[in-house]
Length: 224
Image (cartoon, rainbow, N blue to C red; front, side, top):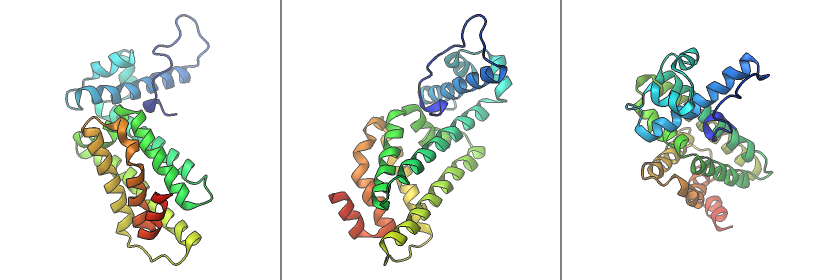
């Protein structure tokens, strides 16, 4: 599991002599910094968060921070990239484990909603805080949106292969599903309801399948 989507099992490196290599020490410190920046920004907002807030939560020195990152922005965007990569990997892993694409979609939705409901700070980073960073953040956000769009396009191809007779969907539809999904998630996070996101499972199942395979498939899946 990624550093930014779990509580650290240890806040500090072992005291005294230890057998950790330099690379292991650096990796451990980086994990703590990525976890800390997401938590600090969730608590204070991106603009108000300082390097001191991040290092204080990570329990590392400012020198250690600057050995890893040149700025708060670089640290936050590294955390964002790790969060979103972990999310996408989890959706793909569960979604492709089912022999039936509809059940794969259902499992993917459950994974998506549980991921954010379990990690409030990461959810804020994904939906709200990334928009405060500025122009440089848009490429990072666009990268994950494009990846999710390609995922939906591949599901549409799988649906046609398994079900047959489905109309070809316009290229804009997968992107529209992604934007709607992120918008629904954002509203829950904005109102402090990230933990309640799993209640959207049936609505999101209908949304995804309606766009990819039509009303009949979507309604039948929700009714199961």
